[in-house]
Structure formats: structure tokens, C-alpha cells
Length: 272
Image (cartoon, rainbow, N blue to C red; front, side):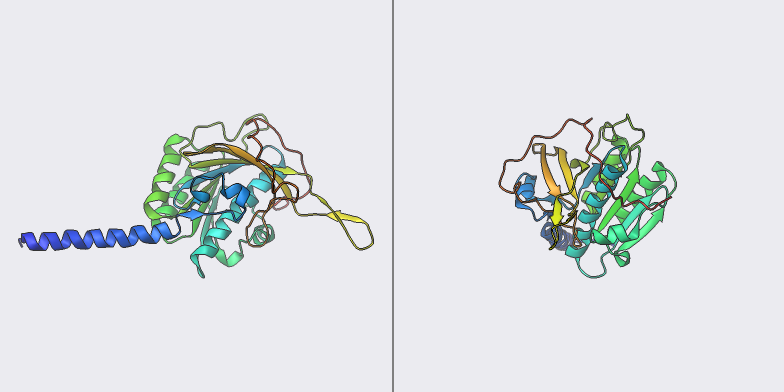
């Protein structure tokens, strides 16, 4: 069946119209801000690109690793909340060690989570890519120890094509190996380290434990500069905050990649 020139023009116009509608829908959620002005002001676009791959790592210390987990859980929780009721986050891992109550305290409720125990790093990356290309998820999170440039480029492209946020949690391979040493196609790369919490005074004057406090280092962002902040960890809505006294000061330069944060009590990993 032949197609006339008029029909061809009409088909091209419809394709352009559909493309514009799709693009405008993605642009509406193109940036996911942290909600902390001091952080968002230093990020290209005023927040995290929603349709992109972002990486984070803690370190060899359990508390640092837990902080990085909660950092990404908070991002995923905010993205799911932004997309509305019924939005789901896929979390892929090699071994089931996640602690549900800890994730819920970071804003990621059980009904928002779809867990996939994949086995090894290659399987986790494959599950992530499949989830991203499905296009119906709020975010896809994966835990790996190794992910090269080719794998991260595939994740980045899949996130861009389908408008889904990709979050890669790089677990430490060994105490003396930097989990972020490998090159990556990620749009941003973060290091999160646990710090001593502020002390809280109760009505009778005894000190208590305050909100978790982290050293947050933006090691790389596409089109922007690295930066560092002292932040208070994720709350029940997945949001960060800057402690009093740090809100108005200049941001610190990023720490060296091999620096180690102080250890504090608490972790998001389940007890063995």
C-alpha cells in the first residue's frame, strides 16, 4: 500500500507532536533538587538530573558504607514521592543485606520497593539495565563492587532514553581499594562518610544522640565543579539538611579520594 506525500507529512507531524509531548513530560521532572539551597546552588541545573546515572560510595568502614546506602535511598525516596502514588523503586543486589526499617527511616517505605537478588555484579548490572529500559519505575538502584566504563555508559544511556533515575552504590572491594577508582560515565559521583553526631540536651540536661551527620563530597559532576558539605543525614522524607552554623558558610573543597571519615555507631545493614 503506497503512502501519499500528504500522508507522509501528516505522519511526520504526528511523530513530532508525540515527541514533543514525551520531551515535555520528561522535562517536568528533569531535575531532582535536594531541597538544601547550599547544595542545590552548586549543582548544574539546581539539582540532580533525573534521567541520569549517579554513583555513591562510602568506604571500608561499615558506618561510611551505611551512610552511602541511606544517601541513595533518600534520593530514590524523593524521586518516588515526586512521581506520585504507586511509584516503585527497583533495588538490585548480590546478597540480601538491606535493613528495611533503616530504609524506611530514610523515606523509602516497603510498598515502594521491588527487591531483586541477582547474584554477582554482572547480573546486578543486567537487572538494572532491564529495569531502566522498562521505563515504568521511579528509580533503579544497584549495589556492585565492579562496574567499568562500558557498563556505566549503558546505564547512563538507558536512564536518558527512558527518563528513569539510575543510582549505583559502589561497595568497597577491600580496605585499601577505592571503590570509586574506576572510570565511570555517571553524571555525578559522590563519597559519603559518617561523622560524629551533634549532642542533644534533654530537659534534665543529659546529652543525647542527635541526627546522623555526614561528610558529603561531590567528587565529580558533568559540567560543574566538585564540592563538599557537612550535612545531616536523610530524614523520613529522604531529605538532607545543613547543620546550624554550616548553612551560611562557604562550601569546603572536596576531600581527596583516599580520605577516611570518622566512624559513628549505627548501620543500615542487617546483622549477620
